[in-house]
Length: 250
Image 1 (tube, rainbow, N blue to C red):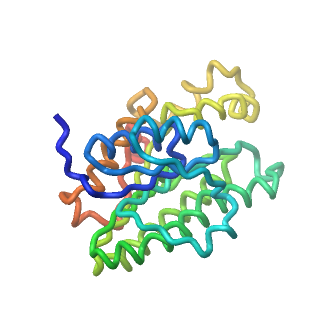
Image 2: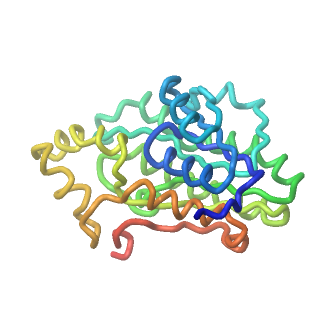
């Protein structure tokens, strides 16, 4: 039986309607937290919120100007929302590059900025930034994604340093390819830029650097997020935790 160790805590999970975000929402809800699902898709957000007896916040997090005056009264913030574009730098659409940076770096900054005052007041808070193995390593054709994730790593560490005296921790989770809609949607693009059939992308591209030859499951990422937001992880901050099948061991 799951211990209700997050009872009374309020969690906000961005991109929470599917994949890693939804798995985190279920992990927190099982342990007693009230979860808000932030997502762009109204129907998916409502369904996800209902599945955890929480609430939905339908929001376009790439509209960062609208987040500048935001205040958040949450104990746990999971920055998970993200998109992917696969293209050589010479062909990369500048608008797509800017979109990814706004959604995956500027938006987490603004959400952290909005959440910290209430966390500081209570003397307790947990920020979990869903980064990637690409926050620690690079791959060709993913300039915007890799840049955003590397920036998120730095933002997370600064948050850890500033939040330490206030009981707030901040950490990154760095998975390799996870079995999510985001990964599934990039298979065609990966096949195109690498010149291989779509059915060969998982084996020849996504799993080529990992020692364990399978995709990560969302609930595996959520299990680590669950530990990071627990009281037992109070001394864990400014860290980056890989779930990458040995990718970054190389």
